[in-house]
Image (tube, rainbow, N blue to C red; front, side, top):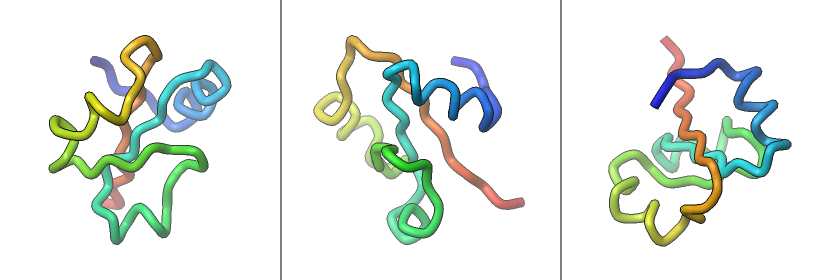
Length: 66
């Protein structure tokens, strides 16, 4: 796993990657990348295996306003 900036995430969108936003539901509605799959971080282990295609690249992100 490695950390990437938002420009690389946006470039990955065109490369058939699955973009996963792990924000809580109340934050996801207001700010997410269009087309992102929403899986809250507390649900990632349970939901990822049934929600994601294991043959495709996955980019997981969380916008944190510090």
